[in-house]
Length: 190
Image (cartoon, rainbow, N blue to C red; front, side, top):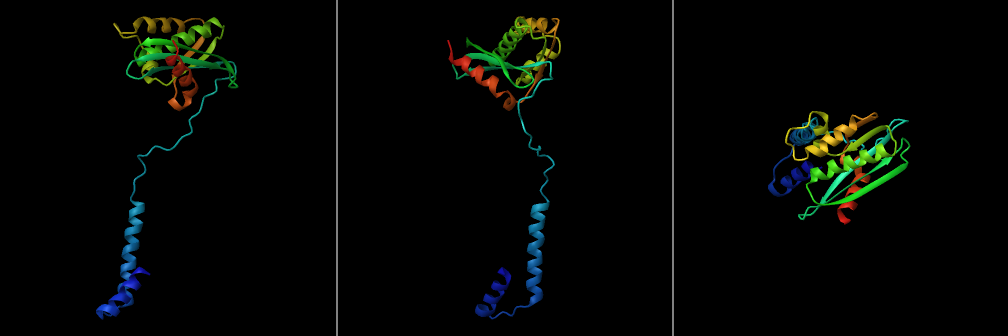
């Protein structure tokens, strides 16, 4: 329509003849530009959206979700977590205030405290979830010598080697939101 209207105006105001072949060529050129604008987009590098949710443990296991929190520049740290059964039913939760600490230390202490509670409550098949890739990777190999938190990491390693089935795996932050709430609660307590 646009090209017909433009050619009509050129005929009226500029006395330029219009022909159908010229109009069709312009329409075709605009169509080719429009098609190439939408088909040349490379979407292969974009990740596909995925649904993130809490992961149910196997039938005879429990899931322990842990997280740490550090509020503001003052470094008010806290930790927390919760344990649920295979149906997602809440078994217990915990949180604590740590004072001025690093973010890494809050997550390490959340894991340590949660594992101790699971052991004391006689849970013997545990999948522990943390959204800290650093903590999970620190526990998958030997503990680096002279690491700032070597003592706590050694204690976690000792707990993991006890007579139970316990694994520590990474989860996305969105799948760990309940533990995050407990950890944040710990940061505000004293």
